Image (cartoon, rainbow, N blue to C red; front, top):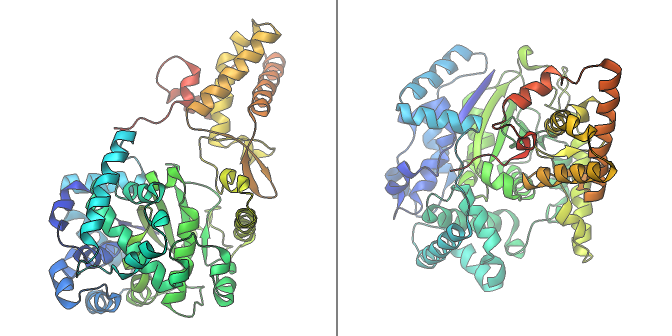
Length: 486
């Protein structure tokens, strides 16, 4: 069964109450992941947390929550469901709708213009200057990072990722988040890693061995809203302590979410619980001591957290890398790790061309080269086939030069819509040239032409029609329009 926890640290309605209360949001949001299990009345208030300490102390929040969390196990599904229902019913209609939209990824995304970026970057810089010596924020690591490299700390691209994490709702929240980011990085990895991107070699041998076991993985597919999915197998892990888990989580997230799309849409996290587990011990031992605070210190938005436990109804979830016997599948995980290491090696050698085109998980809009049912049924490939189907009558009337231009037109439409033509080599996805993309489109036209001739029918499949029916306007190339944003 799936339990969803709603994370919302960037909504305008809650922002004003946090202005000028640096450090208080830390303790409040540390428990936001637990609302679905404990109810809002069980959480310490911001003032309670701030009175106890001038800097984040996960143990205080953990103890406060541990006293109030119900002694539920995964067998107590009815009690846990009732707790969820009570919390959800306590929300206003607007809050329920917003939570539902965020969980399913159908919320509006702010249109990001150069003017918006410049305005918020300037605001964030001003706020960072004013917060440097704030007593309720852990600013030592941030100031140390500035001493080491002003260029790294004030890199606009890095700061923009934190603004996207709060949906450009409040530069103050982004600035607090940015300061906490350096604090966690320093605590987990030390000052030598403060002003550079983390690499595999920054993990000690014990950390590397634990990471290779696959307890924390990035799934090879995205959700229906095109968001990356990370899964954590809680009952199988044998991490030394919460700090080691924090290092692996920090490394995994900072190496996964560093794309413009994932920064805007956020990441989905699935906590997969096998067998019976006490919910209180699970949360306080494995999750909250580190991740309860880290959630508000990362350059990405945690869009939703799903808490799942082993249920026969979900054993058929093929995207989850675990067998019916409870054994982890790590083939994809190790292949992904190898790709990351290869990209890091290219950067170290001064040849960073691969790192700029290295794609972990294709977007649902992308068109994939290759064979097999998985490739042919990929959403981007289906969209392209629908376009070819609709333009086939026009294709039949054109000469050779006209057919080439039509294929080029489709390639341009696909790329202008934010999609890419990707090929896979040694597990890594890379973007193909425009010439190869045009040849693929031309091949689709020829194949479709043969199919139509043999069957005497130009109709698209039922699946393909569903995609076509969702497109506004008569132009088939509208399938590749960018999603609407406000």
